[in-house]
Amino acid sequence: MRYRYRDPRIFLLFAVLCGLAGGFSLPAIEGNEARAAPAPAPLFVCPTATITQWTFTGNVSTPSSGAGAFASGSGLSPATPPYTYFGGPADPAISFSSWSATFDANDYLEFGVDTTGRVDIGISLDYRSTGAGPSTLDLYFSTDGTNFSMFGMSMALIRDSNFHPLSFNLSSVTALNNNTNAKFRLYAYGASGGNLRVDNVTITETCQQSPMISEVAWFGTQAFPGDEWIEIFNPVSGVDINLTNWRVETADGDPSISLSGTLTAGSYLLLERGSQSVVSDVAGFVYTSGQMSDSGEVLYLLDNTSSIVDSANSNGAAWPAGIGAPNYFSMERVSINGNPAGDGDFGWISNIGAVRNGMDALSQPIKGTPGGANWAATVTPTFTPTVTSTPTMTSTSPPSLTRA
Image (cartoon, rainbow, N blue to C red):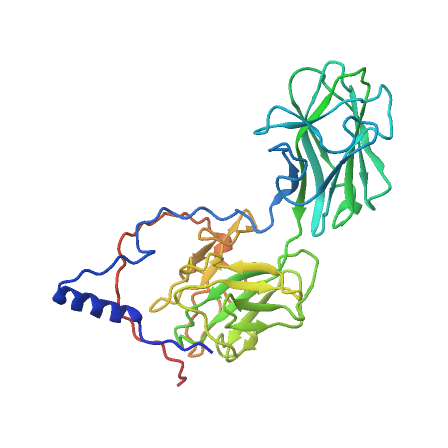
């Protein structure tokens, strides 16, 4: 359990005064210099995004982002590495020749990815077919890594000196969802020589949402500063989550909260430190480990394999929202167009009490929404960066953990 001591800024102020009297100057304190506004967090916890992308930058066939495998058919030149690239190492395309005049099962480019946790798969690319290069392209897919099926109809390729975009929406092929063996092959033919070059091959997805940390009262309540609470939300439509062996814990391991039971779709789990009376009129899950630091720390939601599912205050600096005494505003996750915001300084705002839920241990209204939908989900926040060159020192009374 972590105990809180008197505010160290009092001692710093004392040292400054003594230093002025003694004629020496206080050394610069790292981190108190003026700083630019933080970069915005990703807009959504679960965006439509890239699983894997090949840009071939640096003349390499490994993915530039994500994980995946590339291979070429034995009928092409080159059939194996080292491959041929076109356009220079800064922005190349991978290039192949020896395409056939008619469909040949050995003339293909293959891209393999793991789509675990992903749905609505798509693929896009840029291509250039030279004047004698292939005139037709077929997309094939595999859900077992071995057997391939054609998707849609044959595509006519433009043969000139330019790159052209192509995209395929495979969301109708549900067997590609959540699949460890997803593969895609580009078969091209109708050539009389020439080359086919491809670039920016991108496998896209819509990720499946997961339970998330939706609200944090890192400062406690107006009744007792030690009455901290945390809210977990399950936004996954139609899916109940078994929380057995899941944990909520800070980066230093205190508090560490072991979870259990089932979090049903669209429901909230309230975690209350020490007593059910922390939020006296909302039933919650009681934990007994230590307190969160008022100066800020990272809070994680971990699944039963100890993998990070979500976080709050991922940079470990000062809490991005929430206010302690005397206001006790909770820190709520923002929603944008109905999608939960990512974890970052722009992903959280303080609940000022316009919409609130719950009473503290002394039956005083809580400025937050423990166990219910966030007020932050109903507002459109605006963010004004603040640049501070010198800290403001304020004496605060040490919090008390003693109940009346």
